[in-house]
Length: 143
Length: 86
Image (cartoon, rainbow over the protein chains, first blue to last red):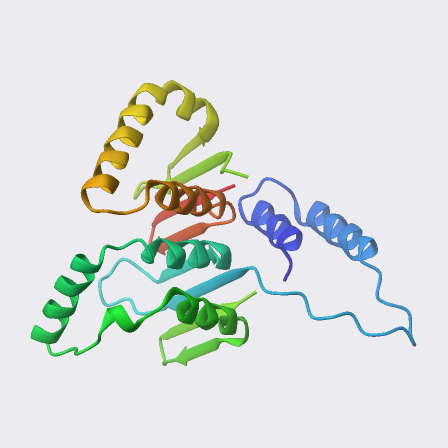
């Protein structure tokens, strides 16, 4: 679902527009995005821009009703964050390593280079994680 | 492009909505004296911890510029919180 269509649905959910207006807006959006003519080369798949985490829980054990979490983080933000990690001073990394080892997680963060994490983020494009439970559904994907 | 508008919406237990629209640039201008102090403190911290201030500034700038489009929406029963950066 593209951004504009989602905005229309949000406005409908918030009661800012009626169902008829939403339908007209969505029709107008569809007309504004004509399909490629037959025979033409298929368009390259657009690169995902956001990492989405959606959690729907119908679990009502707390008595507060169902819970829903919807997080959208730009992939660019992840890349910028990764670049910032390269600024962590070596002595801080050494301390973190010590603590991790003490906690039973022997990971050497000094071996983790920013370009490796960037490669990891590049490959996030194709990531889809679905966790289905009877009363909870978790989805992690890029869009 | 740095964020222009931060939207905060909260539905309270009684069903009423609290809506806050924070225009980032005017708020930054108002807080610019404080911002200057924060930048200075950051520069000193960079020198103390031997981090390149230029790299730190560039990294922070990239982080700020990447913020638009971020959206956090949490609903639990009748309580709901939405933070959106545009």
